[in-house]
Amino acid sequence: MFKITKKQKLGPEMVLMEINAPQVTKHVQPGQFIILRVNEKGERIPLTVADFDSEKRRVTIVFQKVGKTTYLLGSIPEGGSILDVTGPLGTPSEISKFGTVVCVGGGVGVAPIYPIVKKLKSEGNEVISIIGYRSKNYVFWEEKIKNVSDKLLIATNDGTYGEKGFVTDILIKLLESNIKIDRVITIGPAIMMKAVSDITKLKKIKTIASLNALMVCGMGMCGTCRLTIGGETKLSCSDGPEFDAHLVDFNELMERLNVYKEEEKYAFEKWKTEAKI
Ligand code: NAD
Image 1 (spheres, rainbow, N blue to C red):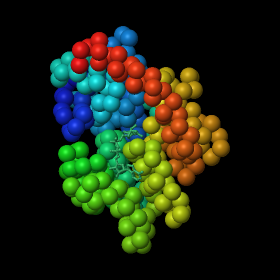
Image 2: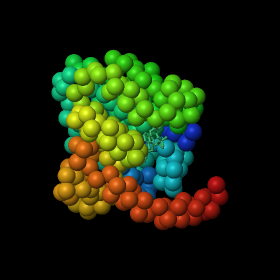
Image 3: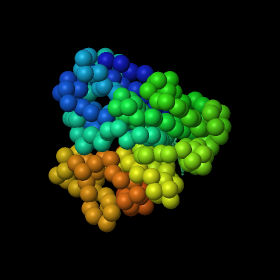
Image 4: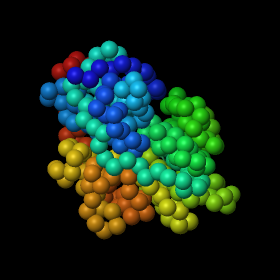
């Protein structure tokens, strides 16, 4: 069993959990993910690591309660336990001294971009972070990201905090200012990563996206998380989760993310009825 040493509400339906997981913190690097199972009958859910403390042997995850498993996970109190945590999984982010790097995080995707921003900065890069949320009450980790960035720019869709609009509106303005950008890294909703990629492709700026494909085993055996990258089939879990965004077939990714929407809805409704929620 893996103990939840800290639980914090970050925003509407947004939860942070710190989990005691020594086998993960021993090896984990930015960009990698874990797969957890809440209980014996629970599905396996992948979550990109949002932070880790190797000394305290704790890994931090941030998730949005959207369906049966994330609500079930979110119902476990601080001090409670999760059945199993597997990881670290996936290939770590490629991080070296690139020059000026723009990190674009959207919504829940702001959390897993944090360790990447931190390591990029420690490697001597000039890091400009752009983070975007639906509204002011969804904003989290502003200070945390700011502390490891040279510059932080914030957008909210409704303009209740930071600039009004999407992260891509800020990115376009930044590119128009003609500063030399050596790399862009993006994590968030697939539609956002596609929009970021479309913009940087025109400017020929190398862009890396962390893909949130459907996943089961997380170790390259089942093929559930297959994607098309530059015309070739790749596995998000073992080949990724980060890929050259300009080669990603985002339309296929988004289509596959919707394949089990009806079943997910059914499972959630059934669980709510049974749990009397
Ligand atoms: P959201 O819908 O609140 O969007 C967050 C931000 O993304 C917006 O505020 C906006 O700035 C930007 N955005 C959204 N749509 C856009 C568009 N069409 N064009 C340009 N920018 C756009 O996001 P959310 O609900 O918090 O995020 C949930 C999604 O993020 C889920 O799909 C989840 O799987 C994904 N996610 C992925 C990872 C990963 O590792 N790849 C990690 C966490 C979350």
